[in-house]
Length: 481
Ligand SMILES: *[C@@H]1O[C@H](CO)[C@@H](O)[C@H](O)[C@H]1NC(C)=O
Ligand SMILES: *[C@@H]1O[C@H](CO)[C@@H](O)[C@H](O)[C@H]1NC(C)=O
Ligand SMILES: *[C@@H]1O[C@H](CO)[C@@H](O)[C@H](O)[C@H]1NC(C)=O
Ligand SMILES: *[C@@H]1O[C@H](CO)[C@@H](O)[C@H](O)[C@H]1NC(C)=O
Ligand SMILES: *[C@@H]1O[C@H](CO)[C@@H](O)[C@H](O)[C@H]1NC(C)=O
Image (tube, rainbow, N blue to C red; front, side, top):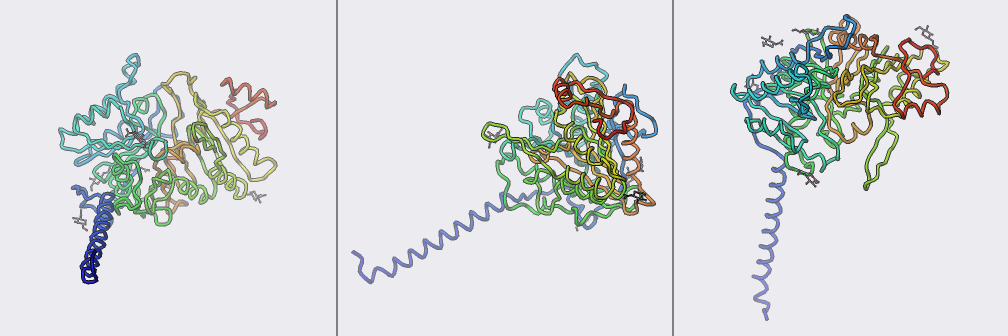
């Protein structure tokens, strides 16, 4: 119907529509960008990378179960519970906590009250933060935790990270940040067993706002995943790593010159510039000149994933390769202390035997493996379980949240702290403390070299029944495992 004269306004109308659509798209884009960038401010934000503190002090904190008799020369280090209480004493503004479990109050009332006391005390102190005007922030992957509900009812802010939506793993990170000045990283969880029955090791770093700022960025990452089921492709700059493998933070730890950075896993959870846990471990092993001492509960180079309801197991080589290279090609002495407990995967023994066999007929090659075992691990109390997860070398230490199991690094979140000493020949600082703790455990009556049966059939059968001969005497025959 419209003649040539009516076509002009029609074109203008179309242009208008196009421009309007463009503006709409732009607006949507802006909204999308800002939904992944949070704009919040805290009192602690006044400390920045430019004026944060690098003059820090570091303390090893340990929980040693009462009835574990360990040689004295490896300690005593600060008790873990004392470390936590000191951190809470220092808190003036905020306490941020990530923990895979929240079980400070024992579920089982038959547990001896004295064993549960420390956990309950810590829980009470966390509840009491409110009355001192200290904010408590918790990021957690737990949906139905009674303790988190109680804490939330007492003014704790709890953010839920739905790990099912990301990797099907767990939020297994375990760390604290206090006032963005002091931090804790280690093997202990917010679990009453961590403060009594299990053997744990961690570090508390005081007056170290530079490191705390960086760890806070990991916390912010979790914090922002609250009620999301995807990782935004555009992230706030507030979660970009400040330091890493290639640009570690230069700092002083108890007046010793050092460098440090925080690493994380899994890869999906590594924000821009963040070093992966596995790369951090690689750096520490590769820079070792004379020794690498490793203490982890489980060592298993396997990746067990579930695909369409069936479980698929694959060999996961990165750490195994690094150890082989260090031992065989560089002549670095490696000691691996693992735990023998209820959940030890039977193939563990095959993999460590394979590592040990590398040194056959090689000079200057030393790889030793010992199993730490206290009591039969039949119950869930994990009594005397060596829950440590760290490594110390002649010039660095790595302390993390994961056991050295492929699946853990691939699907569970965790953080690690790398500490390198600048003048490790003259001044090894905190590394001496790590090494002493390791050697104390290594020499203890609970650390036993494995002595399997000569015929592998028998060995296998026995392992499946959970029986293994553990011998206390140091073995010399590399084939005897
Ligand atoms: C650190 O620097 C920021 C700005 O760069 C400033 O606002 C803040 O007050 C400073 N904090 C301290 C403790 O000096
Ligand atoms: C977590 O994410 C999964 C998958 O996206 C979803 O099915 C589930 O409902 C979520 N759970 C919660 C508690 O939001
Ligand atoms: C932290 O620094 C403050 C002064 O800046 C000092 O009073 C305090 O003792 C230090 N804390 C530790 C644990 O070194
Ligand atoms: C083994 O180490 C010793 C001293 O540490 C050295 O003299 C020797 O050459 C080394 N042997 C081999 C085969 O590397
Ligand atoms: C660092 O200093 C603190 C006291 O300020 C001390 O408790 C701790 O043991 C020291 N750490 C090391 C590694 O020397």
